[in-house]
Image (cartoon, rainbow, N blue to C red):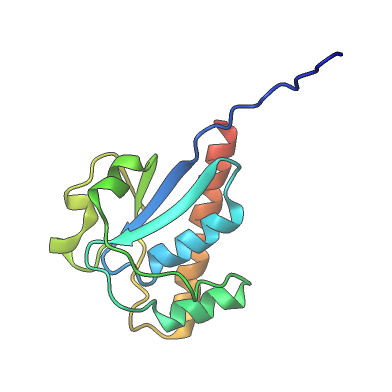
Length: 147
């Protein structure tokens, strides 16, 4: 009797890209949605805020739905030490409240400095969405080059 054993592929651990902002209700949620759509194999997205709120910005949800990405079920989460420790790259979306800005206490942070969509009309939120879309695609392209 002959046994054959296929080569077992060890799966690389998943790398996490963490998008952070203050409320985790608009920009970081949109970035997480886009990264989930475009993420290279072995990567996942997460988002969090220093002062999360109870609901995702409904105008951000609407703007993302327009491009076929549903972020309705995403939840605003508080930024934790573990998230920071286990993330391979942390991206600060921008700050509306300087005292709660993640860039004040996070090292090795990529700062995108994107305007906050909170309280803005859909036209402005679309512009913000499109800027996030462009930056996420650039990020993914950079990851693919270095894989």
